[in-house]
Length: 369
Image (tube, rainbow, N blue to C red; front, side, top):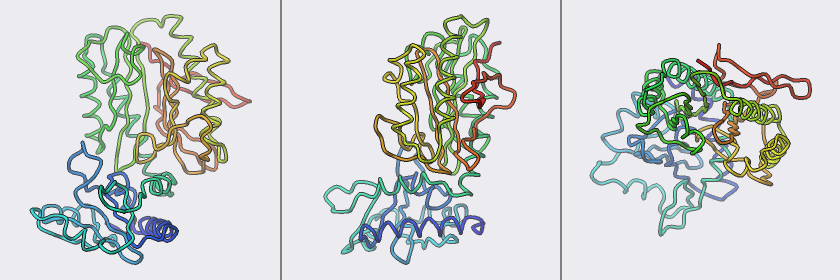
C-alpha cells in the first residue's frame, strides 16, 4: 500500500528536518490534522472531526519518526493508514494512561510543535509547517485535481435537484451526502436562498425554503486536501441588476485567475481586486469580504491582504472568491508551468467568457432554470 506514498513522505520528512536544523530543534511534535495529513501523504488520525488535532501525534527527530498512539488506534493506523509501512514507528501506550510516551520522547530536548503547549517552552512550528505544506508535490497536485473533480461533481449533482420549496437544510444535507458517497466530506457547507444571499457572506444553512434563487458553497476534503467552489441557481429570468453584478464579479474572478502567476504576491492580488472593483463602480466590495487566497490542507491557507509580500509559486493552489451582495464567484485553480488551471470546472455548466489581454477566461454563470 505504501510504495506510491513513500517517496513523498521521505521528501517531506527531509524538508521538515532541514527546517528543524535551521531552528536548532532535536524533535518536532505534529498534532494538527492538517499537518498529519500533509506529512503522511493523506493519512488521518482524526476521530472527532470537530477537533483540529488527532488522537495520535507524530514525533519527528533527526533520524527517526514515531506515531504515539494507544491500543484503540494502533491497529487501524497500521492496517488502513499504513503508518508503520511509511516509516512511522508505533509507540503504543494504554488509553487510560496517555502522555507518558510523548514526555519520554521529548523531555530534555529542544522541541518544536504545531500546537501551543501551555507552561512549556516548545518552539512554535505552525508557521513553518504552513509554509511547507502549501508547496504541493506532483502526487499531491494530482490528488488535489481529484478533489477538485469530486467537489465539482457533488455541487452539480445537488444543484441539479434543487427546486423551489426545498429547505436550505435539505440542500446542505444532500451536499454532505454527495461528498461522503465519493469518499470525502464537506468541511465547509454553506447554503443561502433569496434575500439571505445578499444579507450574509457566510450563510449557514437554515430551514428557509428556496423561492427563486439559491447559492451553494462547498469545500470538500479528501485525504487532507481541500478544493472549494461556489455555484448559483435562479428560477426564472435573471433581474437586470443581478445580471450586471454577476458579470462584474465574473470579471474580477477572471482577472485574479489570469494574474495568478509565479512571482506575484498575495498583496498584489488584493490590490488588483480593489482596482477591478473600483473600475466597475464597486469600490467598497474589496472591504466587505476577503477575496480568497491559497488553498491546500485548509480551506484557505493564507488570505490575500493589503501589502502581503508572500510570493505565489508554481504548484500552489488558490481559491479566489470575489463577491458583492447577492453574487459570488469561486473555483479552485492550480498554478502549473502552463499557467493557472481551474480544477473544479463543471462540464456542461453555463459560463460567461471574460476577455483579458487577448486571453479568454470562462467563469461559471448563474444557472437559470
